[in-house]
Every structure is written in structure tokens, then in C-alpha cells.
Image (cartoon, rainbow, N blue to C red; front, side):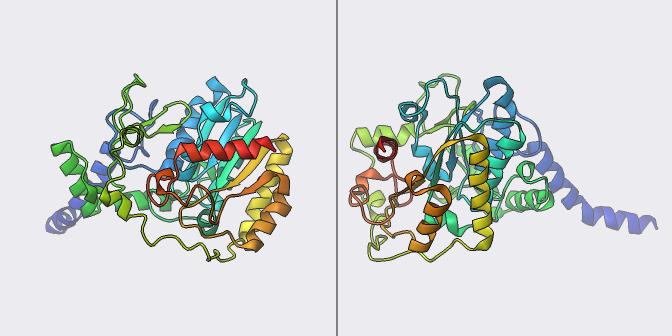
Length: 341
């Protein structure tokens, strides 16, 4: 019997050790509570949807947010400073986005604000056909946080993070970065270079406001201003990705339609001043006419602005950081068009 117990312990010890390290280190910031989820010591890529949810929970009572930008990572080019030119100055801004983005994720975030007793005074909803194609997403960086869906996916959520924690490539990247202090291309989304000091003028790398989750690309923008960003390697990623004669498939099916109609109902409930922006992607592919017609019918044609397809921005790669994300100068011009109507 003693030998049997020793054998069980021997085989179970690595599992216990791994789970213990996962909980104790909490590299993805999903186990313990943090007053600041964007501290200067954070170098691990985290679930943006989870972090923006927790930051909102931390700050909603103190700041009384009432104006939100929802969307995927492309929405981060839309800034508070510019948006405040078109909404009431008294509005309290929050950037409630997620990585990748899905219809379900956006719906649950808007519903979460409503469930928390928050106001939806103004909303800028930044979407694109790729977001519409995702009903829900898998993977630790993209899965919907349990807090906004009644904890229905809590087991899957932590399982995905535990799988990521034990991934050899992640551990290699994390240990390498901790030892060398240098970000390397192979690290991908595992490691980030955000530097969040209390001094916002510390313009190394990127910065995310720990109160309203607005993100600034200080390093990239500085390189662009100095004419050093668009190297041969960066220019190469723009080649062969444009298809101006193409149209995305029809993504809005019954289950997506139900969630989008649910979003509209929440907007109606709060008498929200809302605008829907379909992002000007570099690939120049147009949104499917059936999807656009549904959005126009559901949210009102006056509130939906389609910038998909070939346009004045995506004919010049200088308007983009890479093939997926456009720069704030594009977002500023988009807002000017949207709110001039």
C-alpha cells in the first residue's frame, strides 16, 4: 500500500507542480485580483477581453463610464481625444475591446455593462467582416471571459490558459525574455513590450491607460514620424494581400443575427447615440451585401458606415502599421465622416 501511494505521488507530482506554478505565478493575470492590470512588469500576452472586463469592474463605480468604444484590436486606433470632438465633453470614456473579436464577445460586453447598471450614452462599434465571421473564439487570448457570460465557460477558460502555460514555445519565449530583456520576433503574441509607468511620457514601446484601457503605440508612431518604420521587412508584409474585386462570404446567420438584434435592443433601452463603423481593411475586400443590408436594417442605415473595399486609405500602406491594423490618422478621418452626417 505504501509503495502504491508513493507511485501515485511520484506520477502526480509534476501535475501538481505545474498547476501550483500556474496559480502562483499567474502570468496571464486571471487568478488573482490586481488594482492595475497594466503594470510595468507585465510582459506576457494576456486575454484583452478579460483584462478590459476586470479594469471596467475595478473602475466603474469611481468613474461612472457612460461612453464606450467596442470592437476588436482595430478599434484601438480610435482615441478619446478625437472622439470627444463629436460627443458631449461631459461623457466618460472607456475602451472596451478584445483581441480577434467575435459577435458573441461584443454582445456579452455590452450586456455586461447593462447588467452592472452602467449607462450606454454613446457607443462607437468598430467591426469588420472578419469579426462577423467569428461567433465565438477559442484560445487563451480570445476566449470570452466567464464574468460576462454567467461563468458558463469557466472550466474551458482556465483550461485554455493552462494549456498555453504548458506550451513549450511560450515557456521558451518567457524565459528568454526574462533573461535577455529583449523581445524577439519568434516570441509572437506570447510576449509583449508594453511599458506602463505612472509617467505617461515614458514613450518606450506601447502604453495602455490603466483606467480606461486606451492603448497608445508610442514606439511605432515615433519610428513613423522619423521615417524609420517602413523597412523592407515591414513593407514586404503588404504584398499580395489586396483583392479589390473580392467579396467576403455572407456571415450573419440566425445565431449571429439574434445577438446583433440583442445589441440593438440594448441600445434602444439606453437611448444610446451609436454609430457602427465597418473598418477600412488593407485587403480591400468588400463586406457581403447581405450582411451590410442586415446591419442597415437592424441598426438604421444612418448609423452604419461601410468603409470596406477599395478606398483612399488602403491604396497607401503608410496608413497601416501592418496588413491588419490601420493608424489613428485613418480613424480620425473615419470619425469625421461618421459624425459629420
